[in-house]
Length: 166
Image (cartoon, rainbow, N blue to C red; front, top):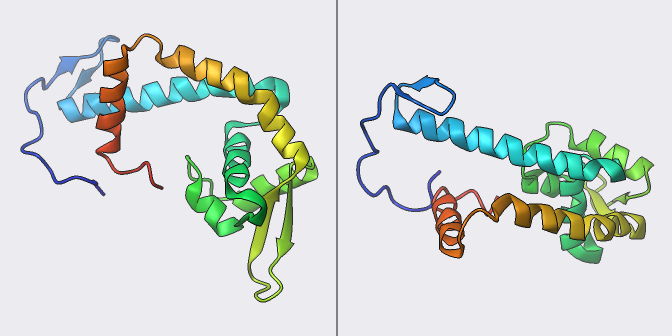
């Protein structure tokens, strides 16, 4: 769902326009969609490489960040699932792996046994602390080819899709 109202007709023209690889796209929207996915995939692969020394996947890193931001209260596992950058159909297994490594702990709610709350441990925080500078430096490199104004424009355009609050 779009956050802002549609501001006119979608762009037309450019049908059959080749991209840099010689592929042809029927519409400019398909080209934009393809470029967004390819860009996201490349950026994600770079993050995965940076996380390898800590033997943490991007999904596990995302869960640890979510739980760190939740504070000492933690989050219900269903809330963790809703906040993931990429949907994971098996958050339970993801949390199992993190718990087995001592990065998170889970507990059942005393009032409603159906609710399981996950919390980051000191060991999980230590992993995030260890990775923090290198991941921040990677993200800086990933966007350093953009001017400050271009970066702000990119953020503004991405925010128009309305997915940042998910």
